[in-house]
Length: 221
Length: 80
Image (tube, rainbow over all chains, first blue to last red; front, side):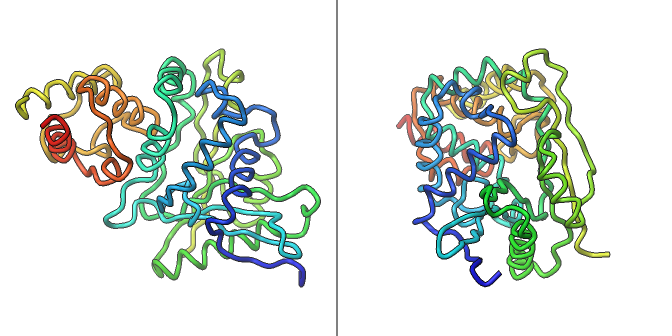
């Protein structure tokens, strides 16, 4: 593991973290929800994500400060984001994320989403206040099987514990078909605690899968 | 425009997007108090409010909005 180094992401990593978000959103499919739901090309999505990360809003999935990166010979090869949900005095991440999307995307894109909201609404799972939320795990294909997700998960938990030593729980959401990610989470002590299923006939045209699952890991026995 | 008039217009938007009326319009009302006010509906609510009142919020302003009272104050300041 000598070649691998762990560090927090910074503004110079925006391009890499954008790729991380896009790859993680797709899971193991070619379907990018941000493209299908906002009627945007992948290039337009990339530009929007870079712009949102550049706003430097903390405590949500589009916060550059949420991410830890693993580098191999100084080149980023893996990343994972994490933040404590709705810290005292902070907005819930769902509001911060929505504000970023609404502020960044065009009226036409939001109007397009409006016509699709009924299709995806049943796949939304609420994030629990005070819990560490993990989002957007990515490991470059050539660096898989090296335990990098465990390294990232542990680093994110340790950082969160320095902010809140009484942190009780970690939560992560993923689509049911993302079997590799689910295996990683189960191996790291997470358990499936909730599922959100959409029966809408068009769901597979817009999201990688029709079922979202919530996994949790308790930090206090 | 009076506060009560703004509040009533916002109420109309909330009912239209959330598809229920199980909330009380008061200054302390926040997204966490209202069923169905999630990441998806929040975006639609804010966009509709901007359109209805002919205003555009800054990101910094949006991220400071803790409740309905703050939102009404912000709209009044934009319309002034």
